[in-house]
Length: 194
Image (cartoon, rainbow, N blue to C red; front, top):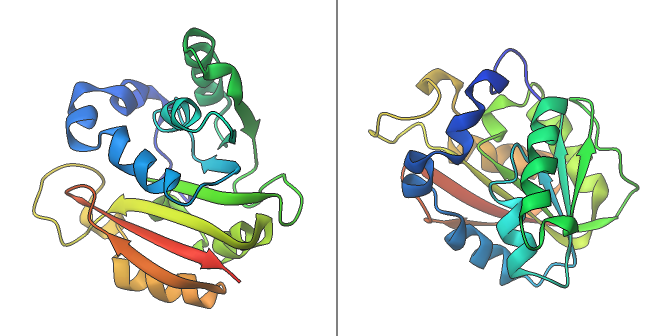
């Protein structure tokens, strides 16, 4: 899911660090997802399950799929899931960088957190995302805002502005984009599949 910008496994501890928990606590995003009442959620770039595990706890009726290109991340996810009360409901899924190994229209929610700027061909991956979304399903993107003055995250030239992301969502056939302000220095976009 990257082109030289993939988050390095060597920095895995940052994904669950106290700094991240202070800057990007799971609860606001989980609450936003829950408001759509999804039944099958795909967390793309799941990493260690930072969001997938709280989603599984908050939405006990939903199926949670955790997709990553990095097998070592999925090993950490599996270990963390085994220790979590609702972790058995998070299904790890390894995938290549350019394809989601799921049937058409098989999920009603896709989540991408801190991943969008890493995608090599963002529009092509959005089209792949739209393929697996049911009609009326939602894609939630939460990513680093290049306009933020906060010194954290990837370099500014790796970030994608919300306006560019909106144009790319439109190009991929995703509509009704909403913007939410859940965290600083991140933007959150919600788009629907036709």
